[in-house]
Image (cartoon, rainbow, N blue to C red; front, side):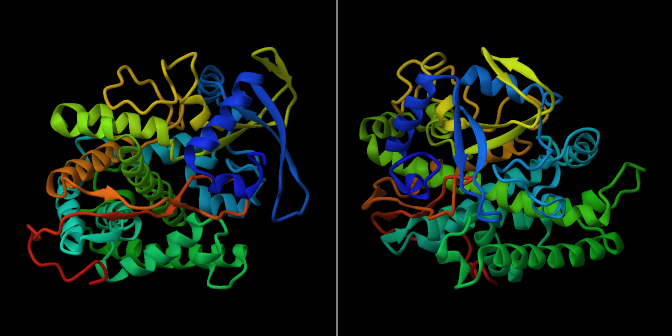
Length: 422
């Protein structure tokens, strides 16, 4: 079995990473073929598994671009790139323009209100599960928590939450039959995208007329003369946020709970000094789990890197999990160590123009939810194996579909909620 087999990505995380380690130590780049469900013709690409090369490729967007073909392994039609990629599938100057507009709303200062709501929503989701004693952590917490934050941040009514959740699960599912309801993968993807596009187009139009204190308003309306997103750019950005911003955090939480269960000594160390060690533990969860599996870049001209000669058009696919366990950078890289410092991982992407814009928010979300979980449900434990996403190919995000946990039931502490769909 190789990393291009769909079954490979349903193996336990540790087994996958040991195989990637073999590729990393064999050569800096490995030539592989990936099945293409759209054309039926396998795609050739080079797997990039060493930290130095991931960093170098990330910081050189003129040599290794994002907007030629896609950031997925398979080339996407231009309209699909616009629809599902937003600015992560663009190069400058378009990338710089759109990212610059959005970045105004993603500074720690601009996000201050959102960061406060993270605490409130963490309380809400734990309140909804805390009396049950046994739940699927993904369904009860990992799945709704980051998406509720995104919906509230955008100003999307809670009544629309089930719609957004179902549509994003289709896009994130990467062909998993559980998300498709018997539909063809590509049709289901575009139907989900159209549903989210319609929702955001309506909300954006409303905010142009009746501005509010939310991110949608900031993107489409201001009185300062600052550049705004075009109407056609709002929905693709929301799809990017609802998918990338949601799924990375969602799976960091699920993987983090699994890692704490697999490493009880590290869990004890963390719980004995929760406030001081939590920032380090969050970084280590991101490093070890590396929720974003890969990003592709395309070589723009003939060049050489780490002794390998590339030609224009070559696809290079950066596997972040392999880079995050590179022994050239990390001591004891296969071990999960909550006190690890420094921790120069690339779990949010390598340095350069495409570094994750929401890294600050994601860190806050993961930190708050583990602080609340380990404080309010201190004996929470994983009771079974994680069930991984059944994707058609190499998943962009290595998802956990189900993770059973149990804990001593306790009483809610927040105001009575009408539920996530209300």
